[in-house]
Length: 87
Length: 186
Image (cartoon, rainbow over all chains, first blue to last red; front, side, top):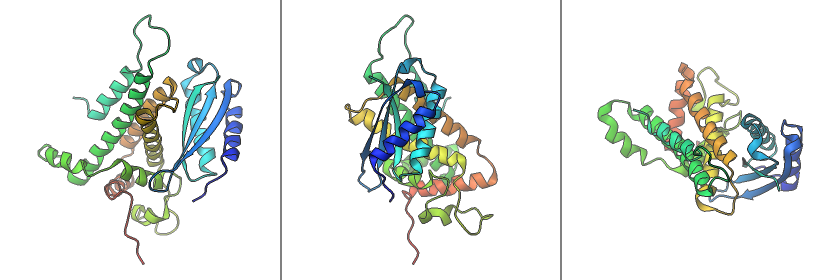
């Protein structure tokens, strides 16, 4: 089981998000790890986006796929990406 | 008549709809119900797929299929899909899913199966938070994106219909029944 440091993973998410079409809308990024009963686990990835209601769903889908791909290369836990209105 | 998964996806979409002139934030309960309903659409699609492929599609077998579907579990599906979500299938089940044209080496997960696996794992994680953890924020965008992802995964699965893709689906459905676990050979 490959588990990377959450700070390192957060930085990777920021890097991916900054380079995306939504880079200028980017707010906070937070990661939470959650273990399940069977020892696999989950990474809950919360990405803050300014004016979330106004951004294009296609851009969000692309960003979600890029984050999943980037984190899966570094960590065995499944990354579930969510978007929230940035403070 | 629409299939149950389609009916559920339609309901998931309706929960996110607004009446003409309606403004302001959508109620949290509608967002969470929509996420949960999209997950259940995918779950029921997989129940139907597994029971149809393993028992047969004849109308007379409907009751048997419904009894059989009760054996499949949420955690068993998660365990199975976690093993096929990457480009290369987990070594513990690789040989079981190995196509006859690839006698040795790592076994690649077909793109339609990777997409289904990731959609399922994402939907289940969000459904758990939507239903059980009100501290986890979930947005209308999350709900819209998940519904679209589930629709895309189902469409991709349905359109994968070559002999090798059908063979993969059949073996994968058996693994879903076995909760992704095979007896280890010594």
